[in-house]
Image 1 (cartoon, one colour):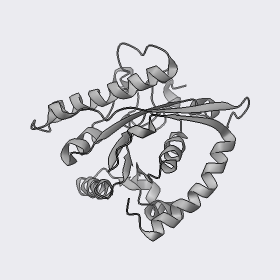
Image 2 (tube, one colour):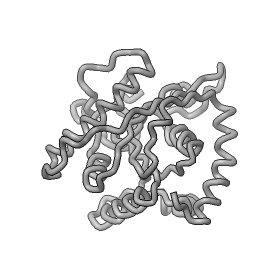
Image 3 (cartoon, helix red, strand yellow):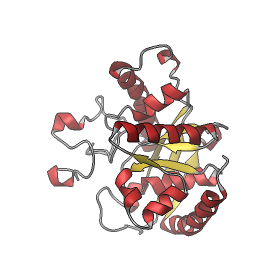
Image 4 (cartoon, helix red, strand yellow):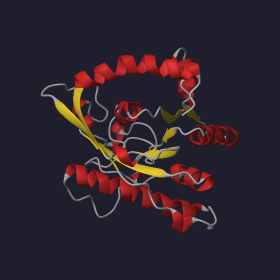
Length: 248
């Protein structure tokens, strides 16, 4: 990707700090990296612990693909952190229509330059008690269909043992292994030419979530639930922490 000099230098500095720390915290095993497209793409990992972005970002950066995450717009207003996020061209997610359009345009520019956009379709940490992927949001499917962008499903497992969901401290011993499995780009060709209404976007999102769930089932060597967890059906918030209302 054609990263600006400022962005490239900032990434190098961050990686120089983060990679050694991550290597100390856990072993790593990455499979399927050869499936990453040569051009721009959307990565859709599962989301089960707060350090997931570090795990996925580490893997992508080591493949010479600078990771660009969709992050809460409020984070860009935090002193120092906000400047850092802007410097490495992360993407603010805003609620307003104008803000959403700006985020979408920036994402398209990054992909057009060959960049990797990381979108967690679940929108937040999974509410599933056993950490299986839950019902997804339509953002990744919408961006993919509007821009004709490949969607690469990913699953990772093991980092939650180092830093469990909603934890306050790291569990470094005994040493754990974080595994990442990358799948083939999701085939969304069946949705070409269809109106991008709610029904189409939800169906495309389900296809993406099925691919992510299948990869996680392979990593865990377990059978996923027959029905994907739906926070609304369990009176849970769609965003943010849910530990106050029964989340583990």
